[in-house]
Length: 491
Image (tube, rainbow, N blue to C red; front, side, top):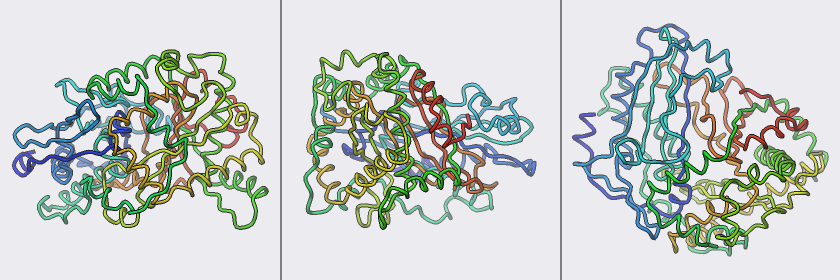
């Protein structure tokens, strides 16, 4: 901490609309570490804390204060004399690592209160939105450690989140070897938002109508959400999410079951057509959720939430209220903008593309033919995202910073699903000196109609899929034979 307070420099970091679009959400995971060798000095909290503050020096944006005006312009102000210090907590639990492992890392085995924040970025006890929340939980008999780490989307995306956690682990491992933080090789990443804008192409391509209207078609609700303060907005969104009963589960798709799904699809694709794991899983997720929602359609609270009726009057929605189903696929600009990955940019570069389907057609049943058709649609959409498309989208967003709440406002008035592929995130690289985590898990519930495709431990193979749906829709999903035959329910 002393080094951080001494060496941090005051600065102002302007954010862009790509940061604020998903700013309401926290990125948060549990990292499970087992002390399988019964080391007495296993991941000591003293060293974890010291290395944590040393790592924060490489991410000064994490100790800044969020400043946002009513027009959507946002910046992070790092004031050396008034830092927004992270929350770093330690606690001890009577739970043994063996108990957590026997429960397949299910949330019921976790100590109470381990997640110190929820899915929405809200003000803490000091009235400030923290940019880092850490909770180190030491399990009984020094059998293991669980680290809860949360960073809001205001300042990083998933790639930036992993960059910080892995830098922290790197510093800790370095210091554990007897070195000082000052001798550690310099961190190569950068958080300057100009990095993103400098990699945009000079030419751009027109946006499709769905994308353009999703990000620009505003109404009283989206304008009001953009006008209120970040703290008020966070508090309100947290309350709204809590109003709809949500249930979360984690499933595992093994390499063998995934190969079976690919085999089904290959019977219906022509030679040379490329269908990836992401295409198959996104199509399967979308169709399974559409079936669940179609079966729950009569219950407005299950399918549209408590704000839906209000939104019908306040918002000119892009989507037909009852007949359309929108699959929002999260894309990353890094691999599509030459040089951006090499620049190791840690700010937000994620955005969504939508596949709009008729609910009845998408929910008519999952077969080899229908799964192939949907996987092809996913592949076609992903392939259409190139540098010129991104240039036009980001240019459109930055031309009107107040538009950042349009997608959120529209989400309360439409049926759909957000699918985000985290499988390439370096979640299993965080080695603090005693090995990589045995398991990495999201929190129990995030928000309704969300799916993350996650990596698993390198020794396991396949993918984990994290689902949060309304309780009614989740009950239907767990009765879906095609879905349940394709996955294993972990917890």
